[in-house]
Length: 189
Image (cartoon, rainbow, N blue to C red; front, side):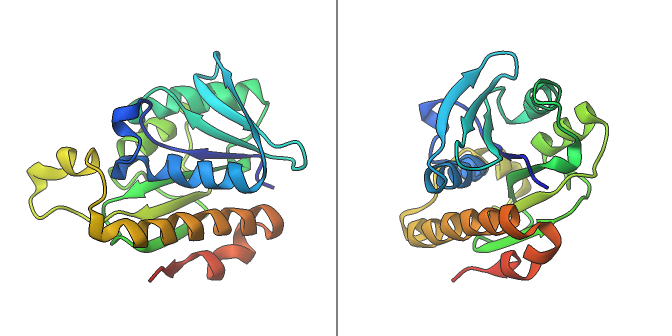
């Protein structure tokens, strides 16, 4: 059973609408739908949304993307959670925008936030929701690309992706990861 949904991103106004923060955006949408209340947990270095009518917390680490594992490790300790009780939402360059993939476990795939989590909690065995953001034409453009906002022409699709990602998470909370795979693993159009 999932007890914590963790959206990855970077804190600060300048990163709010960037591709790298799609995990935060989906987490916010879930927190809104579940009518959760936000509070900052200093030890966990995270914004934590407590959901009074649901047995889950929604978490947004405030350690910056590449150090997400520090916050997640502290969160597991603070809330006495096992890795298989968390679900991490993050952006994925290897999936085109509009693609959402739910997985039970796996490697970081080169994503530094996920690598930080894997290194800090010492396992790859935790569920994750990969949100495709596409890839720039040139490899040297990756940093600039992930830290840039979505284009105007992408905004409607991004809204649909955030909505679908949130519905996927709600499905997982109700039915579990295995039973949610078909619902979640879709291309949003």
